[in-house]
Image (tube, rainbow, N blue to C red; front, side, top):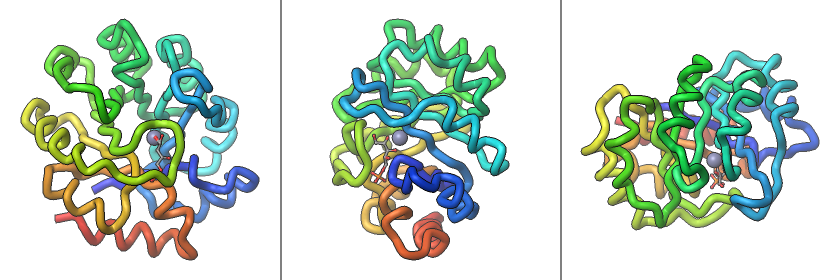
Length: 211
Ligand code: DX5
Ligand code: ZN
């Protein structure tokens, strides 16, 4: 199991300190929002670049932006290890994933709750991670959408073991279990970690649900 801490839920006035407090997480998830694909604007590549120097953890950049192909190189240079784009945000998903791979990064595709997975078999050759959204993208602290459990199961039937499934949105002790039962092993966690008194303890509790 991998737990990625989502910095969107962290206190942005002290990102450096927040980052140190989630050193137990396997990776750091950066939610990049452009105010167009989603309403909110979050942070950009300079934030990722400046914090890259502080940790060896995996940096997983989730681009909630229109035309993500325009920004891939910037985030690759800022220190991303995984770059995830939304299936709904680009007309050229295969080409965009190919571009991420050509820069030596892991490629991910994020799938919104109402998006079907029919395209998935056609991008497997350029894909490392499937990010299943269990909330609508745009903010942390939302309620987990239970209907997405069926999507997790269906994704496990389409992909090989080499491709990671990661679940993003509304993960806590109650919602992680049905995801694990459906075949998910990796999780993005925002408010459950950053709204707690002890981040390490929150991460440890969630790890207790792996098989
Ligand atoms: C939602 C983001 C998530 C979010 C997760 O648009 O993609 O990564 O920050 O936060 P929680 O765990 O609070 O739902
Ligand atoms: Zn995210």
